[in-house]
Length: 300
Image (cartoon, helix red, strand yellow):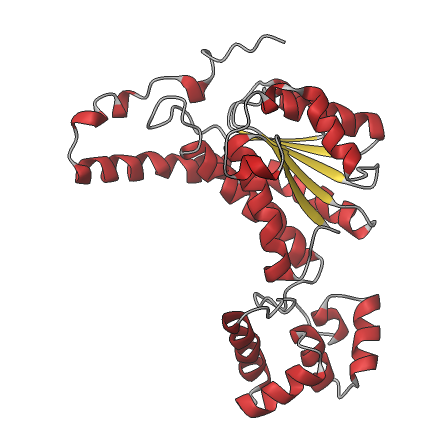
């Protein structure tokens, strides 16, 4: 397939930055900041599409499926980044959310020539992880024309799986190929064609929404507190203690004891304390219902 990119809005020359090489540093900064304001508005226009995609993700995850991000270059890196952050933030690993970049993990740091041009490469990558009809695919590409992503979307359809397309142009093949199309039209870039800029910022913000809102609906937070956090370092361990002292109004010594008895799981610790449960009873209850507010019978 021959890609015609000169008509894409992301490939147009931005008149506001046509002479950016003659600007002072401060002028450059202010100009880039002004251009970035358009990203917020563009995302706002796509709110309903984003919401629909989130609802579909929740259905897939509740049914035992996974959210699989695919993309090439910056888009692929952003997908891998968002998936990677789900473990420390929500206690959810690759068994639920995974990012795949064209060219493999080597492509996270180094360009892999022509990887994005191979539709079959994405199919091979999805087959390797056992992609199936329970999973939901989120293909990310600023242009909406990347062959790697189109291959993945076609494969998802053939498997009977739902799919999302996140692009930064409208009227493109990926939007037509997906069950849940999201078009964040960010326009011409500060540097012509450099979609790591406005398009990349838009993609990152939408991915934040997709994963965060999905995890909230799965009960991975209590209010706006990340009660499924994995305290894998000193900062996160202290954050876990702060949650317990703040919510339960206990001192840090008591919080440390409670957290240890809960095997360093904040949500379990909260349930143990608030419902006077043993560790075994709390974990059993959470295995049936992950939403702490429901278990505590609170109105949210």
